[in-house]
Image (cartoon, rainbow over all chains, first blue to last red):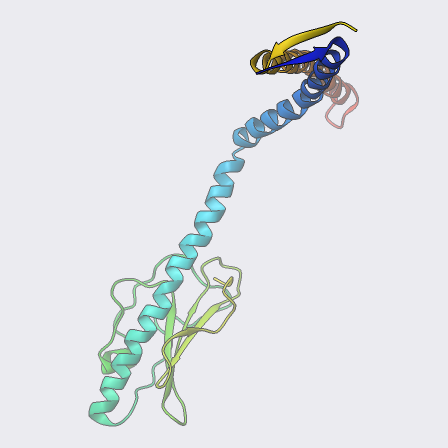
Amino acid sequence: MTREYTLDELDRLARNRFLLGLLGAPLVLTLLCGGVAFLALGGAAKLRALVSETERHRQTARECRFNLNSLRTAEQAYNAEYDEYVATGWAPAEPGRVGWDKAQSFGMPEGFAEVGWVPDGRVYGTYRVRLTETGFEAECRMDLDLDGEWAIFRATERARAERVTPDGVF
Amino acid sequence: MKTLRLTDDEITSWRRRWLVRGFVLGTLAFLPGVLLGVSAAWVFFAEFGPFAK
């Protein structure tokens, strides 16, 4: 398809494109140089590490829910046979001011041995069962990012494990 | 008034050609400016900065 163009029109078209290129070049180059500098300074790696760390924390925090449900089932089984629940102390360790980011060996602590439940392998969280008026409350605490703010999960004889603290706390 | 009869392809390549020219000139003008700015900052801090000898 063809069209008639006056010289003025062609001049205007050329000028518009030329200015666009002229002003766009610094913008594109700045973004490019910025991107290269960002990569050179390891920004991408840091960003990736940050994202994957959060994801790793989220994955690890699933341990609490999984283990608490399993512990709850064990307590209920014990209750069905002996008509009582068993209280335990904190295992593998008392939650202090700050947690730990390495998996700990759980061992065979007294209360847990009686109920007949220990987690499969090492654990990142610490567990306890407390007796209540109606039954028991099992709790898991975890401080993977070592900021002193513990992620808390709880399960009771009536309810399966639920996160008590906000979702972003690990 | 003088006019030219151009096809769509011709007018598209006309526009693109001028865009490329602008981009090239913009790049050529921009890079020396950046180099000059960086060198000037370097020299300034080397001479008068907190770690100047």
